[in-house]
Image (cartoon, rainbow, N blue to C red; front, side, top):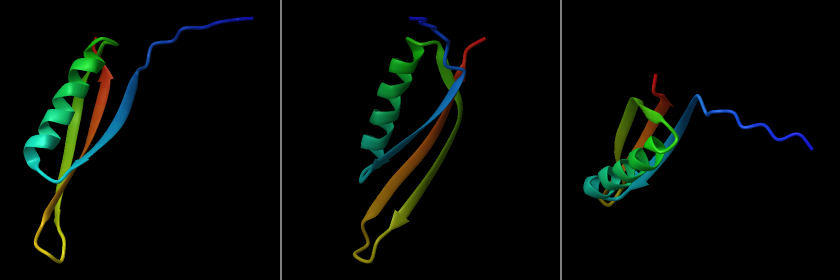
Length: 68
């Protein structure tokens, strides 16, 4: 059996929440987790949508890359 350990070079994670504060908290927690595997934030894209009842829905895509 051959076991190989390769470093993750980059990854994209998606987040969603009904309040901006919750979305920020989720992203901050994941940033801390990814620091353990030497990934830092490369870019963040976010959107807000409003449904028919006027409620806001927040989403974000965070691109993590290896720290050099």
